[in-house]
Each structure stands twice: as structure tokens, then as C-alpha cells.
Image 1 (cartoon, rainbow, N blue to C red):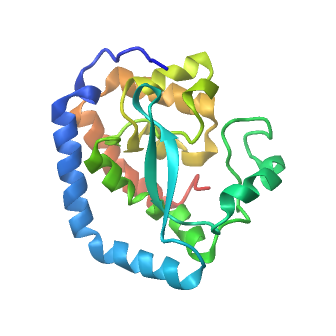
Image 2 (cartoon, one colour; image 1 turned 135 degrees about the horizontal axis):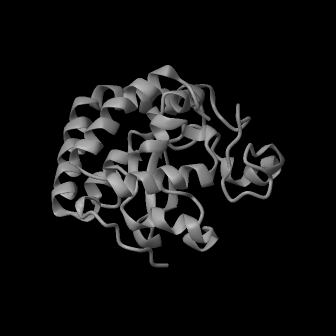
Length: 210
């Protein structure tokens, strides 16, 4: 499924690709002690793999495998159908979020609160499926997007973005689309730097996590 090209070239530029991959590589190196600690904590406190790999929707609706630290029980996807009635966005919404998700592990609760489960996304940035900043990739297909939501597929998805500093999971899909459109219209290197600077501040506040 195709989406309109953004007016600015930053989101699709080679400069952004190189910048994102370089910073992601440096962050992986600098954060390696923390990553190892998290991996050991997951492995020895709950049954299952350290990483959770899930298909997500990226640029122009292309599906790719996104890597995260596992924050839920191993069969969380199988259990999902039993908890649709708890979906904070409505049981018929394609967007699925639960406050205090019962499928979450003890370690996972802290990982999600501070978005530490997202750190392995850095591998996706190096691979080229994602950038440091952009719309967060959804688990549901582009075929399930409302027409007004397709605009968010005009750039590569990011580890962080305007929704991450503006409400995180408290925002529904339509609200996130508005922020994604705002990002696409204003995208650029300095705008990305501003978002990257504000992201850890918002994450440490712990607000809007789900």
C-alpha cells in the first residue's frame, strides 16, 4: 500500500540513513552493559526468549520484523484475544493497549514504564527498517489503516517521535496520526535533535506508559 511522498527530503535522505545508523551503533556500544543486564534479568526471571520479534508496518506499508526485549509472558500473543474487552482504545479498535496488562512480567512492567524494551529497535535502525525519529510502527497492517492514517507511512518509522514526547500510549491512533503529520510537515535534522533531547525526559517522567 503506497503513501504520498513527504514534502521534505530529510525523512528519506541518505544523510538521515547514515546519521541514524551511526548514532544507533554508538548507543548500542555505550549501552551494552545495560542491555546485557536487562537480557540476564529477563532470562532468569521468566520463561521464554530474551527478545520479542514482531512484524510491524513501516515505510510505504512494508512489513518488517521489529526487535524488542520481551516484557510479557511467552504466550502473550495467544492470550491477546482474551483481553480485547480491556483495550483502552475500545474493543473494536485495531490499536491494542491495556493499562496494567496482566500478561506483563515483573521485569516487563519496569521495561515498559521507561521504554527500555524498545532499546533493541536500534538494531532495526542499523538494518535500515527504521530511523531514530519517525512515526512508531504499528503491529497491524496498512490495509487496516483509515485513509487519513496512510500519511504516516510516507517516512520511515522511528524509535521515538512526537507521540512519544506528547502522550505515549495515552494517545489513540487518530491523535497519533495528527502528530505524525505535524512531524512529516516539519521534519529535519534539528527537529529530530529536539525530539531526541526531549525523549529521555518524558520517559523518565513515566507518564503515558502502557
